[in-house]
Image (tube, rainbow, N blue to C red):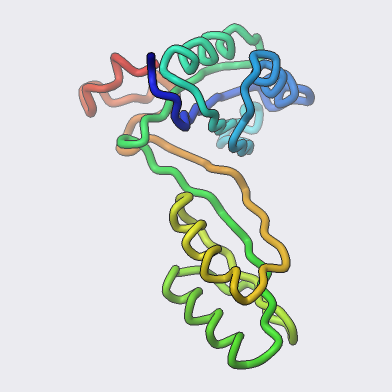
Length: 183
């Protein structure tokens, strides 16, 4: 039996009303919970890119990919392998910081994690962190002792390394050998 793990799918779809709903229904209809979802318009305003993360094994991922490809609104589906892709998420933390000592400590933590300080008030500091799950979890664990007032995550976005793209026509031939066997 294949190991169930976090799988990342990049999906190019029509940028029109109802498309995201159809894609999400496909996952829920098959009994899968979407662990992370990020959607945005590409360089072509008629096309959006959806990055979906789901817990599944190889066979389940293949099934989901094939089902996605059957949707008329879907242009392309690509499974992104962790070793050949770049994955990032934006996390915003609003942290309780009512004294200058606490603010300084939070600023030091922000500096260590290369977080951006995007708002400071008399009683709180808001940080923006870009990274993978381990970076977000590590800073969250440190900030928890000060009191996290709010936290919001964008969902993971991902791109393949090098010149590979989701669009088969723009790929460099022979850059990586793994392309032939990817779901």
